[in-house]
Amino acid sequence: MIARWLSKYELDILLLDKGTDVCTGTSKANTAIVHAGYDSLPGSLRARLVVRGNRMFDQLCQELDVPFERCGTYVVALSEEDLKTLEELRQRGIKNGVPGLEIISGEEMRHREPHINPATTGALYAPTGGMTDPFLLTIAAAENAVMNGVKLMLETEALDFVLEPFSLHKKRVAGVITNRGTFLADVTIGSAGLYCDELMEKLDIKYDFYVRARKGEYYVFDKAKSDAVVHNILFPCPTPITKGILVTPTIHGNLLLGPTAVEIEDKEDTSVTREGLEELYKGAKRLVPDLELTDVIKTFAGLRAGGYLHDFIIEAPAKLVGYINLAGIESPGMTSSPAIAEYVVELVREQGLELREKKNWNPIRKARPDFSELSPEEQARLIEKDPRYGRIVCRCETVTEGEIVAEIHAPIPARTYDAIKRRTRCGTGRCQGGFDTPRVIEILARELGIPPTEVIKERPGSNFLVRPTKGVPEGGQDA
Image 1: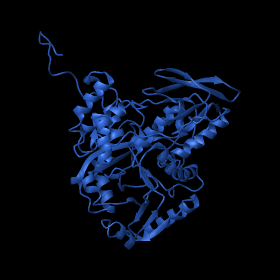
Image 2: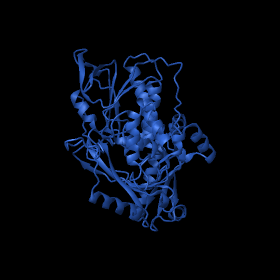
Image 3: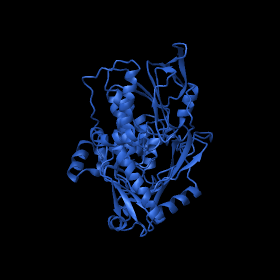
Image 4: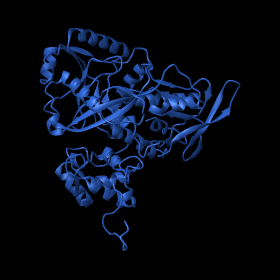
């Protein structure tokens, strides 16, 4: 998002990402909620940016052609004590400038959500809350940046920095040392999520906080049953650590339960656990007792950076020149992202760069056709233009070969199975890729000009295939 905002100006911008695709870290595994902003501490940078970011979402998603629904959110009280918490949140939200906050009765909440816990005593309704698709939002912002001249380098990991003397008490960050070479820059922006503390350590940036990976586990329910259970975004009363286990529909019609919040040491451990799933189900049933696991089609876990500051760190460190540090960007980071980008632009300006606006900057990014959302007439015209749109690859989500090929040749090409999945929902239905995976591997291999054995799921080494099982050469050696 920051790269997109900076692409408005006459700058040479290089975006480095250590993943095989954009959106492979925290952004790919969250609850997809656009938060209203009542939860952040009044006066904090986080409170200011989440409310500003929320207001920017309608225009942002319209420009990027990303689905967004401002459906409102509910924080549900299950006791008289919880009602006091709701009032505290409402007052906090008012101080933060969140409009329309209202506490409704338990009776009214049960009318709006018939399957909610009968013990519900009330709910805080935030009409400005909403939901989006975090995959498409991240990808669309990056694509728009690339379309406006930003150079993207994937599988490029920051290992260290180029430091130069500047004054008696200051150093200049003159560039980044990566696994793919050294890149010099007038201004470097560090936005490394879970690894922000490691970048800070290399630059001797000291704060009275620590970063831990906080694992959140989720259940995903089948679309066919989701709408019959819950229609709205439901939060429990929050704790000092987490907003709690939500029960929420998604923008594409599934039902999502989660997340848990467990600190772990391993910043790459996205495994799900029996204990986590049990806690998840127990917490969700406190809100909606009728939930049954028979309709679960997927479990997954995501990691977010727990910083324990209850605020974002976004600043140019006093002892460094040419560096902007972002750290502790936990929830509501996605909601805040456009406002964070706007804020960082001003920090870049303060570093002395002349920001001249481009005359030809284009904020519009048009999404590729979503075959399942088209009318029969539109589908027919698309198939006539390109017969590959008439070949269904994923039956659960009605994803066509034409859509997959379009994403492989998009401004940021989808080069892995999961990259296709994030862009098209291929493999996200009830069969979870059981039908489509072999066909997607075949299409990726053909379009990328590589053997099927080189197609990977996500990370290097996650190959689906080892070797051909046919065509053994003479002499009996394996192919």
